[in-house]
Length: 257
Ligand SMILES: Nc1ncnc2c1ncn2[C@@H]1O[C@H](COP(=O)(O)OP(=O)(O)OP(=O)(O)O)[C@@H](O)[C@H]1O
Image (cartoon, rainbow, N blue to C red; front, side):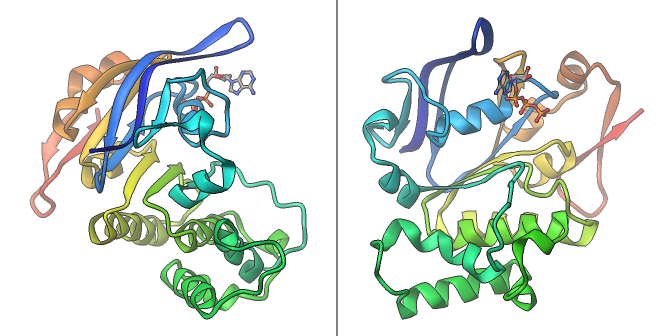
């Protein structure tokens, strides 16, 4: 069953057409990657799926509900977002930010429950930010901030997680750890992950399905090895690659020639 879907979704910024007639279903518990060149519409699509950008009626659905008729707080109980750029101007602590993941479940003056505290501590531990607990959010490195924002999304306990290049600022160790963690959340908790990623090898390794965008159109959609081929990469990114079998990992590796 689809937990998120689009039906003939199009989007313009002013006169400029950004997305064209996208119809796609995202099913429960699968790991989806969205790939495509800079400016192909990936972030725009993610924002429409999250209800951050307004969509036309009956073009974006969470289960069977048109996202336009779902209240913001209810959307936040169903879907969490790890955005590309998080502009942190306020002097919140890391712990405060992760606790904000619990906001969809609490009323204004309600105190945090034991469950809230446990979920927040667990999420901070899983993302390796427990030692930063009392640090100001404005004093973090790009990679630390990315992990804190992921912790907030985990604490939000949603069935759907949308991530916009969540590993772009991470060192190679954390790139691997965070990718593994998000994959584990998907497979163990049945969370549907929709992940924008530039690294084709990461996409190949973790995805159940890949959506490849070009100029706001779905260029190709399917299993990783159907989508990432010499021909599609040449056509979409204008580069020559080889796909080779790796002796240890089961997925093919993309090598630039
Ligand atoms: N607020 C905005 N106003 C006008 N045009 C915008 C706005 N945001 C994005 N665009 C344009 O929409 C197009 C798609 O942008 P989008 O951010 O969705 O691409 P992307 O595939 O995520 O790119 P990247 O890989 O660089 O992050 C681009 O041409 C961009 O310049």
